[in-house]
Image: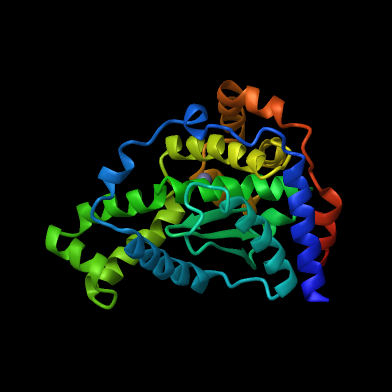
Amino acid sequence: MKALALLAMLVAAASAQAQFRMPNIDINKMVDTVKNVGKAVKDIDEPEEIAIGKDVASRLLGAAPLVANAGLQRYVNNVGRWLASQSERPDLPWHFGVLDAPEVNAFAVPGGTVFVTKGLLQRMHSEAQLAGVLAHEISHVLRKHHLKAIQKGAQTALAGDALQQAIKDRSGLARDKLISLGSELYTRGLDKSDEFEADRLGVVIAARGGYDSYGLPGVLQTLQASNAQDSTLAMMFKTHPSPTDRLGALSERMQPVLDQYATQPQLPERFAAETKKLR
Ligand SMILES: [Zn+2]
């Protein structure tokens, strides 16, 4: 039964991909090239990135556990891994989790772990919208946005040797400080330019995965139309540029891609079936 459901999911994902007739999008033409990433994080290699991400993720999971629904978690992982498998870092240990929280939020930790809250899933209407949000978060990992921010913060807070020790040694006090700094980042947010870049790259990745390119803009429109006083939106609005600004930036830079891939599948029925226990 479970294997059949997974097979159906994979077949459906493959057929979504089959409808995607222009697979050769050149991401570097669509979004800023990132020649400086290697330099900015030269002290942290990929195993260290993954280890730091694991520690930050477990700290964040202490604040909000995963939804106890294996089918839902498997579904979100299937969509996320499908998208990540076609990214420039397909071999990271990608994990996707739905947090049992009413707040509207999604975030990525270094090394390939992505969380989306129950509150955000409940406001989505299709798998293309889920794909748009996951692709935005995948983009943060691809571009090492959080890793760079954590390193930058740590360089100020920890002297040179302590920073090196915090990266290499997973048990010391310096490490604890590094992970605390990393966790706090999720209440402050990234630079706005990182968010706009993740929006642009996310649209490309979702389109490449075979989804309607308007998935992410659709979610932003829902947020734009929401009551700004709604307390479940406070953290999202505090840590991100406004939905209006994000939609404007997407329209300005990505309109050709949005138009070209707008007729790809949205898969609202499958999304509704897979998430119905949340409603
Ligand atoms: Zn983001």
